[in-house]
Image 1 (cartoon, one colour):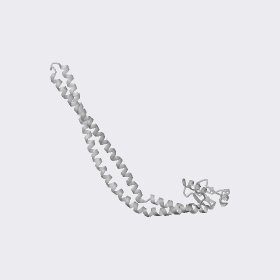
Image 2 (tube, one colour):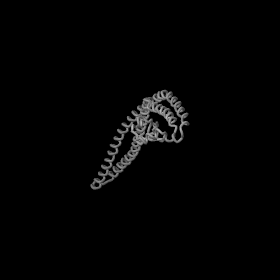
Image 3 (cartoon, one colour):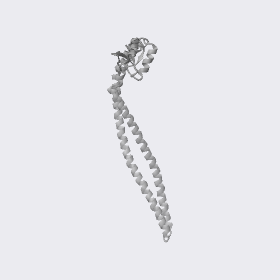
Image 4 (cartoon, one colour):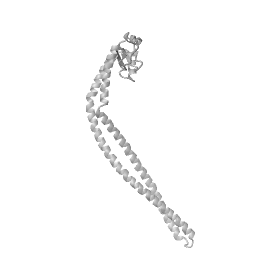
Length: 232
């Protein structure tokens, strides 16, 4: 088999992989991704605060209606009180209990409203803070994006050129070898290694004499330890 053609292909292929990795691991790119994640997180936080405020508004509407109903109930109770016979102590006492209960409901509603007003003020403060963080983060993100695009432009051109060289060598490798190469590459790199001092140079495993003979005779041999193809 034409292992040398495969070796030449791998040499250029790994150069392309190195350039692609360099682009991905650019310090500016990593900062850019971190900035993007920060923006996404702040956007989620902003939405959660908005949802909390909306829930408070809905609850306030319910409380205001309930408060209005109780106040109307108290007025009705007062009217009933005026129509009672002062001598009817049981009726007067029962109605006073109703009024007291209604007033307790009013105090409870007012207490909850005050609590929600404090929460609303806190959420408003948080919204302003998150909004400011987002504005600053987006400005930083846009600038870093421009810097990264300028930095990576040259590297991307190099990568395209290198991939073109890889593509040009692809036709020199038999299809079965190429298929094997690509299958191994999915789980280990480099897929092809040289035999060195009776060992697989990928994992430094010593090979039995029968395997060494196969390699020297040009057979396709994969390392039983790391799965790489081993060539002479």
